[in-house]
Image (cartoon, rainbow, N blue to C red; front, side):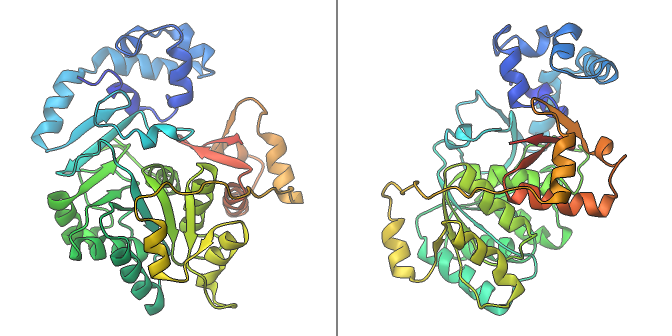
Length: 352
Protein backbone atom coordinates (compact mmCIF):
# COMPACT_ATOMS: atom_id res chain seq x y z
CA UNK A 1 0.00 0.00 0.00
CA UNK A 2 1.22 3.50 -0.84
CA UNK A 3 1.98 5.39 2.41
CA UNK A 4 1.79 8.78 0.65
CA UNK A 5 -1.46 8.23 -1.25
CA UNK A 6 -3.51 10.63 0.88
CA UNK A 7 -1.15 13.52 0.17
CA UNK A 8 -2.10 13.52 -3.51
CA UNK A 9 -5.56 14.90 -2.66
CA UNK A 10 -4.08 18.16 -1.32
CA UNK A 11 -1.94 20.24 -3.65
CA UNK A 12 -0.49 22.25 -0.78
CA UNK A 13 0.87 19.09 0.89
CA UNK A 14 3.73 19.07 -1.58
CA UNK A 15 7.26 17.68 -1.63
CA UNK A 16 8.77 20.61 0.30
CA UNK A 17 6.25 20.29 3.13
CA UNK A 18 6.62 16.51 3.17
CA UNK A 19 10.35 16.93 3.81
CA UNK A 20 9.55 18.96 6.93
CA UNK A 21 7.15 16.29 8.19
CA UNK A 22 9.70 13.54 7.47
CA UNK A 23 12.06 15.11 9.98
CA UNK A 24 9.56 13.99 12.62
CA UNK A 25 7.86 10.91 11.12
CA UNK A 26 8.95 7.96 8.99
CA UNK A 27 7.59 7.64 5.42
CA UNK A 28 5.40 4.73 6.52
CA UNK A 29 3.88 6.71 9.40
CA UNK A 30 3.80 10.29 8.14
CA UNK A 31 0.26 10.27 6.70
CA UNK A 32 -1.31 8.79 9.80
CA UNK A 33 0.81 10.69 12.33
CA UNK A 34 0.95 14.41 11.57
CA UNK A 35 -1.06 16.68 13.86
CA UNK A 36 -2.92 19.98 13.66
CA UNK A 37 0.14 21.60 15.23
CA UNK A 38 2.35 20.15 12.49
CA UNK A 39 0.06 21.63 9.82
CA UNK A 40 0.14 24.97 11.58
CA UNK A 41 3.94 24.89 11.46
CA UNK A 42 3.62 24.25 7.71
CA UNK A 43 1.77 27.60 7.54
CA UNK A 44 -1.55 26.06 6.61
CA UNK A 45 -4.54 28.05 7.81
CA UNK A 46 -6.83 26.44 10.44
CA UNK A 47 -9.77 25.82 8.03
CA UNK A 48 -7.44 24.04 5.60
CA UNK A 49 -5.84 22.02 8.38
CA UNK A 50 -9.27 20.95 9.63
CA UNK A 51 -10.26 19.93 6.11
CA UNK A 52 -7.14 17.78 5.75
CA UNK A 53 -7.59 16.11 9.14
CA UNK A 54 -11.29 15.38 8.46
CA UNK A 55 -10.37 13.78 5.14
CA UNK A 56 -7.70 11.65 6.79
CA UNK A 57 -10.19 10.37 9.37
CA UNK A 58 -12.43 8.92 6.64
CA UNK A 59 -9.89 8.00 3.95
CA UNK A 60 -9.05 4.29 3.64
CA UNK A 61 -5.95 3.92 1.42
CA UNK A 62 -6.32 0.15 0.94
CA UNK A 63 -9.95 0.48 -0.14
CA UNK A 64 -9.08 3.34 -2.46
CA UNK A 65 -6.30 1.34 -4.11
CA UNK A 66 -8.75 -1.51 -4.68
CA UNK A 67 -11.01 0.96 -6.50
CA UNK A 68 -8.06 2.11 -8.59
CA UNK A 69 -7.26 -1.46 -9.61
CA UNK A 70 -10.81 -1.92 -10.87
CA UNK A 71 -10.11 1.01 -13.22
CA UNK A 72 -6.71 -0.43 -14.19
CA UNK A 73 -4.98 2.51 -12.52
CA UNK A 74 -1.74 2.12 -10.57
CA UNK A 75 -0.69 4.58 -7.86
CA UNK A 76 3.08 4.97 -7.56
CA UNK A 77 4.32 7.07 -4.68
CA UNK A 78 7.78 8.59 -4.30
CA UNK A 79 9.08 5.48 -2.51
CA UNK A 80 7.67 2.89 -4.95
CA UNK A 81 10.29 0.80 -6.82
CA UNK A 82 8.74 1.82 -10.17
CA UNK A 83 8.89 5.55 -9.42
CA UNK A 84 11.44 6.97 -11.93
CA UNK A 85 14.76 7.91 -10.36
CA UNK A 86 15.23 10.70 -12.93
CA UNK A 87 12.02 12.37 -11.75
CA UNK A 88 13.34 12.44 -8.17
CA UNK A 89 16.07 14.84 -9.30
CA UNK A 90 13.72 17.78 -9.87
CA UNK A 91 12.92 20.49 -7.32
CA UNK A 92 9.28 19.52 -6.73
CA UNK A 93 8.61 15.90 -7.75
CA UNK A 94 5.02 14.66 -7.48
CA UNK A 95 4.46 12.64 -4.32
CA UNK A 96 2.20 10.23 -6.22
CA UNK A 97 1.93 9.32 -9.90
CA UNK A 98 -1.29 7.77 -11.19
CA UNK A 99 -0.69 5.52 -14.20
CA UNK A 100 -2.80 3.82 -16.81
CA UNK A 101 -0.97 1.65 -19.31
CA UNK A 102 1.36 -1.25 -19.78
CA UNK A 103 4.70 0.58 -19.96
CA UNK A 104 6.91 0.27 -16.88
CA UNK A 105 8.50 3.44 -15.51
CA UNK A 106 11.45 2.04 -13.57
CA UNK A 107 14.63 3.39 -15.13
CA UNK A 108 12.68 5.74 -17.38
CA UNK A 109 14.96 8.20 -19.18
CA UNK A 110 12.83 9.67 -21.92
CA UNK A 111 13.09 12.41 -24.50
CA UNK A 112 10.38 15.07 -24.30
CA UNK A 113 8.90 16.57 -27.46
CA UNK A 114 6.63 19.59 -26.88
CA UNK A 115 5.25 22.51 -28.83
CA UNK A 116 2.31 24.66 -29.80
CA UNK A 117 -1.28 23.46 -30.02
CA UNK A 118 -1.55 25.22 -33.39
CA UNK A 119 1.49 24.15 -35.46
CA UNK A 120 2.01 24.79 -39.13
CA UNK A 121 2.87 22.06 -41.65
CA UNK A 122 6.59 22.61 -41.07
CA UNK A 123 6.24 21.99 -37.35
CA UNK A 124 4.20 18.82 -37.84
CA UNK A 125 6.63 17.39 -40.37
CA UNK A 126 9.65 18.34 -38.28
CA UNK A 127 8.10 16.62 -35.25
CA UNK A 128 7.63 13.35 -37.15
CA UNK A 129 11.16 13.51 -38.58
CA UNK A 130 12.73 14.26 -35.19
CA UNK A 131 10.85 11.46 -33.40
CA UNK A 132 11.91 8.98 -36.07
CA UNK A 133 15.50 10.18 -35.66
CA UNK A 134 15.28 9.55 -31.91
CA UNK A 135 14.73 5.83 -32.37
CA UNK A 136 15.08 3.44 -29.40
CA UNK A 137 14.05 6.17 -26.94
CA UNK A 138 10.88 6.74 -24.95
CA UNK A 139 9.02 9.80 -26.23
CA UNK A 140 7.38 11.91 -23.51
CA UNK A 141 4.79 14.61 -24.14
CA UNK A 142 1.51 16.02 -22.82
CA UNK A 143 -1.10 14.66 -25.31
CA UNK A 144 -2.33 18.20 -26.07
CA UNK A 145 -3.53 18.92 -29.57
CA UNK A 146 -0.86 19.99 -32.03
CA UNK A 147 2.82 19.11 -31.55
CA UNK A 148 2.22 16.86 -28.51
CA UNK A 149 -0.26 14.75 -30.48
CA UNK A 150 2.08 14.60 -33.48
CA UNK A 151 4.93 13.41 -31.25
CA UNK A 152 2.88 10.60 -29.67
CA UNK A 153 1.53 9.51 -33.06
CA UNK A 154 4.99 9.45 -34.63
CA UNK A 155 6.29 7.37 -31.71
CA UNK A 156 3.48 4.83 -32.04
CA UNK A 157 3.89 4.65 -35.80
CA UNK A 158 7.58 3.79 -35.36
CA UNK A 159 6.94 1.35 -32.46
CA UNK A 160 8.63 3.59 -29.89
CA UNK A 161 7.38 3.60 -26.29
CA UNK A 162 5.58 6.82 -25.39
CA UNK A 163 4.36 8.46 -22.18
CA UNK A 164 1.61 11.09 -22.00
CA UNK A 165 1.59 13.28 -18.88
CA UNK A 166 -1.82 14.87 -18.39
CA UNK A 167 -2.83 18.04 -16.59
CA UNK A 168 -6.03 16.19 -15.66
CA UNK A 169 -6.68 12.82 -13.96
CA UNK A 170 -5.88 9.69 -15.98
CA UNK A 171 -9.35 8.15 -15.83
CA UNK A 172 -10.71 10.39 -18.59
CA UNK A 173 -9.23 11.49 -21.89
CA UNK A 174 -8.30 15.15 -22.22
CA UNK A 175 -8.69 16.61 -24.75
CA UNK A 176 -11.71 14.54 -25.82
CA UNK A 177 -10.62 14.75 -29.47
CA UNK A 178 -7.67 12.48 -28.62
CA UNK A 179 -9.76 9.54 -27.36
CA UNK A 180 -8.35 7.14 -29.96
CA UNK A 181 -4.78 8.22 -29.20
CA UNK A 182 -5.46 7.96 -25.44
CA UNK A 183 -6.67 4.36 -25.79
CA UNK A 184 -3.73 3.37 -27.95
CA UNK A 185 -1.18 4.87 -25.55
CA UNK A 186 -2.79 2.90 -22.71
CA UNK A 187 -2.25 -0.30 -24.71
CA UNK A 188 1.31 0.44 -25.85
CA UNK A 189 2.66 3.09 -23.48
CA UNK A 190 1.55 4.90 -20.33
CA UNK A 191 -0.73 7.77 -19.31
CA UNK A 192 0.42 9.63 -16.16
CA UNK A 193 -0.96 12.31 -13.86
CA UNK A 194 -0.33 13.57 -10.34
CA UNK A 195 -4.07 14.20 -9.88
CA UNK A 196 -6.30 11.48 -8.37
CA UNK A 197 -9.22 10.21 -10.50
CA UNK A 198 -12.13 12.62 -10.30
CA UNK A 199 -10.00 15.45 -8.87
CA UNK A 200 -10.73 18.99 -10.08
CA UNK A 201 -8.24 20.80 -12.26
CA UNK A 202 -7.69 24.37 -13.46
CA UNK A 203 -5.85 26.12 -16.29
CA UNK A 204 -2.80 26.22 -13.99
CA UNK A 205 -2.74 22.40 -13.88
CA UNK A 206 -1.36 22.26 -17.41
CA UNK A 207 1.79 24.39 -17.05
CA UNK A 208 2.22 22.72 -13.65
CA UNK A 209 2.42 19.25 -15.25
CA UNK A 210 5.21 20.41 -17.58
CA UNK A 211 7.76 19.87 -14.80
CA UNK A 212 6.86 16.16 -14.86
CA UNK A 213 7.23 15.91 -18.65
CA UNK A 214 10.71 17.42 -18.47
CA UNK A 215 11.55 15.61 -15.22
CA UNK A 216 11.00 12.23 -16.90
CA UNK A 217 13.34 13.22 -19.74
CA UNK A 218 17.06 13.60 -20.18
CA UNK A 219 16.54 16.03 -23.05
CA UNK A 220 13.66 18.26 -24.19
CA UNK A 221 12.78 19.26 -27.76
CA UNK A 222 10.74 22.44 -28.28
CA UNK A 223 9.33 22.47 -31.81
CA UNK A 224 7.16 25.59 -32.17
CA UNK A 225 5.54 28.07 -29.79
CA UNK A 226 4.97 31.71 -29.00
CA UNK A 227 6.77 33.52 -26.20
CA UNK A 228 3.75 32.97 -23.94
CA UNK A 229 3.25 29.29 -24.82
CA UNK A 230 3.32 26.33 -22.48
CA UNK A 231 6.05 24.82 -24.64
CA UNK A 232 8.34 27.72 -23.77
CA UNK A 233 7.59 27.16 -20.08
CA UNK A 234 8.64 23.53 -20.57
CA UNK A 235 11.91 24.64 -22.13
CA UNK A 236 12.55 27.06 -19.26
CA UNK A 237 11.74 24.42 -16.66
CA UNK A 238 14.07 21.97 -18.41
CA UNK A 239 16.89 24.51 -18.23
CA UNK A 240 16.25 24.88 -14.49
CA UNK A 241 16.23 21.09 -14.08
CA UNK A 242 19.64 20.87 -15.75
CA UNK A 243 18.24 18.98 -18.73
CA UNK A 244 19.56 19.39 -22.25
CA UNK A 245 17.24 21.56 -24.34
CA UNK A 246 16.93 21.48 -28.14
CA UNK A 247 14.84 23.95 -30.12
CA UNK A 248 13.75 24.07 -33.75
CA UNK A 249 14.91 27.36 -35.31
CA UNK A 250 12.28 29.29 -37.21
CA UNK A 251 11.88 32.17 -39.59
CA UNK A 252 12.23 35.68 -38.20
CA UNK A 253 8.81 37.29 -37.86
CA UNK A 254 7.00 33.97 -37.53
CA UNK A 255 5.17 34.05 -34.15
CA UNK A 256 5.53 30.25 -33.86
CA UNK A 257 9.31 30.64 -33.99
CA UNK A 258 9.50 33.19 -31.16
CA UNK A 259 9.72 30.62 -28.37
CA UNK A 260 12.33 28.26 -29.89
CA UNK A 261 14.46 31.17 -31.14
CA UNK A 262 14.38 32.72 -27.66
CA UNK A 263 15.45 29.42 -26.09
CA UNK A 264 18.34 29.15 -28.53
CA UNK A 265 19.43 32.64 -27.47
CA UNK A 266 19.45 31.38 -23.84
CA UNK A 267 21.70 28.41 -24.63
CA UNK A 268 19.42 25.72 -26.08
CA UNK A 269 20.89 23.64 -28.91
CA UNK A 270 19.44 24.39 -32.36
CA UNK A 271 18.05 21.38 -34.23
CA UNK A 272 19.80 21.68 -37.59
CA UNK A 273 20.92 18.19 -38.62
CA UNK A 274 19.08 14.93 -37.82
CA UNK A 275 22.19 12.80 -38.31
CA UNK A 276 24.07 14.94 -35.81
CA UNK A 277 21.10 14.67 -33.46
CA UNK A 278 21.31 10.87 -33.63
CA UNK A 279 25.01 10.98 -32.79
CA UNK A 280 24.46 13.29 -29.81
CA UNK A 281 21.64 11.17 -28.37
CA UNK A 282 22.95 7.75 -29.20
CA UNK A 283 23.09 6.69 -25.54
CA UNK A 284 26.06 8.83 -24.45
CA UNK A 285 25.82 11.11 -21.45
CA UNK A 286 24.54 14.54 -22.49
CA UNK A 287 26.44 17.73 -21.73
CA UNK A 288 24.55 19.82 -19.17
CA UNK A 289 26.71 22.93 -18.85
CA UNK A 290 24.95 25.74 -20.72
CA UNK A 291 24.62 29.13 -18.98
CA UNK A 292 21.51 30.14 -17.10
CA UNK A 293 19.85 33.46 -18.08
CA UNK A 294 19.64 36.33 -15.56
CA UNK A 295 16.78 38.85 -15.56
CA UNK A 296 15.73 42.09 -13.93
CA UNK A 297 12.14 42.96 -13.00
CA UNK A 298 9.92 45.24 -15.04
CA UNK A 299 7.82 47.80 -13.17
CA UNK A 300 4.72 45.58 -13.31
CA UNK A 301 6.68 42.50 -12.24
CA UNK A 302 8.26 44.42 -9.37
CA UNK A 303 4.82 45.35 -8.00
CA UNK A 304 3.74 41.72 -7.97
CA UNK A 305 7.10 40.36 -6.80
CA UNK A 306 7.03 42.70 -3.79
CA UNK A 307 3.79 41.07 -2.62
CA UNK A 308 5.31 37.55 -2.56
CA UNK A 309 6.92 36.67 0.80
CA UNK A 310 10.65 36.06 0.58
CA UNK A 311 10.33 32.84 2.59
CA UNK A 312 6.83 31.65 1.73
CA UNK A 313 4.01 31.68 -0.80
CA UNK A 314 1.03 33.87 -1.64
CA UNK A 315 -2.28 32.69 -3.05
CA UNK A 316 -3.42 33.82 -6.49
CA UNK A 317 -6.71 34.88 -4.92
CA UNK A 318 -4.84 37.24 -2.61
CA UNK A 319 -2.98 38.84 -5.52
CA UNK A 320 -6.27 39.29 -7.36
CA UNK A 321 -7.38 41.63 -4.60
CA UNK A 322 -4.88 44.18 -5.92
CA UNK A 323 -4.34 43.25 -9.57
CA UNK A 324 -6.73 42.79 -12.51
CA UNK A 325 -7.02 39.13 -13.57
CA UNK A 326 -5.88 39.47 -17.18
CA UNK A 327 -2.92 41.65 -16.26
CA UNK A 328 -1.93 39.35 -13.38
CA UNK A 329 -2.16 36.15 -15.45
CA UNK A 330 -0.05 37.57 -18.28
CA UNK A 331 2.58 39.04 -15.96
CA UNK A 332 2.87 35.88 -13.83
CA UNK A 333 3.33 33.78 -16.97
CA UNK A 334 6.16 36.03 -18.15
CA UNK A 335 7.73 35.94 -14.67
CA UNK A 336 7.56 32.13 -14.65
CA UNK A 337 9.17 31.96 -18.09
CA UNK A 338 11.97 34.21 -16.81
CA UNK A 339 12.47 31.97 -13.79
CA UNK A 340 11.51 34.65 -11.26
CA UNK A 341 8.60 32.77 -9.69
CA UNK A 342 6.94 29.38 -9.75
CA UNK A 343 3.23 28.61 -9.51
CA UNK A 344 2.69 25.69 -7.16
CA UNK A 345 -0.37 23.44 -6.78
CA UNK A 346 -3.31 25.22 -5.22
CA UNK A 347 -2.48 28.43 -7.14
CA UNK A 348 0.26 29.32 -4.69
CA UNK A 349 3.00 31.65 -6.02
CA UNK A 350 6.56 31.38 -4.72
CA UNK A 351 9.78 33.21 -5.46
CA UNK A 352 12.60 31.21 -7.06
